[in-house]
Every structure is written in structure tokens, then in C-alpha cells.
Image 1 (spheres, rainbow, N blue to C red):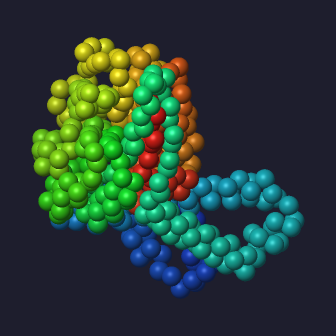
Image 2 (cartoon, rainbow, N blue to C red; image 1 turned 60 degrees about the horizontal axis):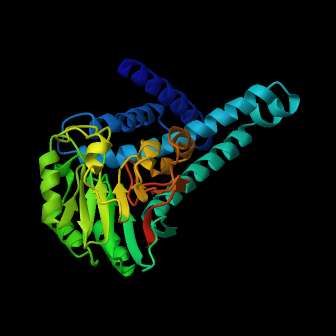
Length: 375
């Protein structure tokens, strides 16, 4: 399977690279093709240097380069496939042959348009990923009592602290959350990007989380990236940051409501004891009070909705992060983003506040979720 994936990756890279060379030669006739191919291959290999080999001096820069390269590659691939389909359909026509195929000026114009378009997409995607938005939900749960209460929840997921996202981003997130004046802060997994040792200024980041102001404190679950050889260090981080980590555990908060936290269903690496059966987790939960569950992946929504849970908060999907990824996540999950009610269970899936891989979002947004829970 790995060999097939590498072969497909190589073929697609050659397909895109060949067409980029043709367009570059049309726009810049004196370009050195050998230098282009050397740089192109180096960029294509950065994803393996950044993610598939042991950490070393150039890991961070390799991840940054691979992020921008893969995004550029994705949209060039889409554009070239569309253009080739058009060429196959209309290439035999007299107009197409005279005006496009045999017209040097047309190649220059098309090449310039493609490069400007892709550059615009990348710049917008980078801005969009950094432009954190507040998304609001009003949720009424089924067991509303005569003594009506409202719980103001700030929820985030998929921060992915590591080589790309660090203290500056966490400080901004902390300030935005505090601006919501939440009663409680909930984190639905993927605080880390798979490697604790990739994080710089860890003490500053811990302080930024400590500075979160809420009545009941901050609670979190692990995501699939909160795993690996540095798992124990990640768990220790939550303690140092005053974040209550729930691993198939629950806490009854101030005799008002219960927060349940699930272990991730499919962690990428080591994550301690495996996830327990949901019945065992909920066995001693007081069902007379509102129950809020944090579960990183929205993979078991139907099963969890059978358990009389009032609200489930998930992340993981990023809503695809980069179009057309959202078309994939939409078909993988019952709900990949937004709000859904299954029986009496309210489900909210966030697209996340950070990014994985490229610091870009196209077709999704970086968000902090603000929920007004009425009970």
C-alpha cells in the first residue's frame, strides 16, 4: 500500500511539474529547467523529511515548505486536470488549435492567469487560517427544569501546537476566549500536533492556558494527534496548564451538570490504555443532570445518541481544511461540521481553531465555538 501511494504521488508530481515547466518556459523563456526540477523535487520530498523521518535540525523548515508546496501542488493539480479535460473535449476544433494550442501568446496569458490564481488562493488560505472567527450556537436541552439556567460554553478543538503553531497563536486564542466571558472552557482534542518536543516556549503556552478565565475551569480530551512517543509529556502539560484532562472519565461540576471525556477512538501513536466501552464510562453518571460529552472524532454519534447524552462536542474533521477536502469529510461522517440533533442529543462538530500541515484554510474557517446551553 505504501509503495502504491508513493508511486501515485510520484506520477502526480511529475504530471504537475511537467506542465509547470511548459508554462514557465512560455512566460520566462530563459528559465533553467534543471534548476527547476532540482528545487521541485526537493520541495516534493519535504513532506517526508518533515513527517516521516526522525526529528532533526531541519524538520521545522521542511514542514513549513511542505505545507505551502502541498497546497500549491493540490490547486495546480486541479487546474491542470480541468484544462486537460477541456483540451481533450475541444482540442480537435479549429478555433482551439489556432487560438490556443498554436498561439504562443495564449500560453503566456494562460500561464500568467494560473500563477496569479494559485498565488491568490494560497495568500487567501493563509489569511483565512489566521483569521479566527467566533461561531455561536443556542442549544436547548430536553431536560430543562423549572429553574431555568444558561451555561456559557467556549469550545475549541484541533489547535495542533507544534512546529507551525506556537505561543503567539495560543495567546491570541486565549484572549478571544476570555472575551466571551465563558462559564467553562472545553477542548475537544488535538491540542498537540503529534510531537511535544516540537513545541517552543512551552512554559509560555502553559501560562496562556492558565490565563483562561471561566467560572468552572478548562476541560479537555485527547485527539488522535495527542499521541506518540511523547504522550507522557503531553499528559504532564495538561496538568501544568491547569487543564483537567478526561480520559474515559467524567466530572460532575458544582452539582449542576456533568462533563464526560472520551479517549480517542483511533490515535496515530501511543496513547496509554485503549478506549473503554461507552457503557462502562457512563455507568455512574447522574442522568438527572445535563450531560456534556467531549469526543474528538464524530465517529460514534449514533451509538452515543442512544445513551441519553444531552450534548456531544467534537472536532477532528477540520471541515476538510482545504477544498475539496470538505467533500470527502462530508461523506465520511454523519456530520462533519456544524449542528445536528439525533434523537435528544445535540451534536456540534467544530472545524477547529488551528491547522494540520499547511497553515491554510480554503472552504473552512478557524473558529472558536460559543455555545449558550439552556437547561
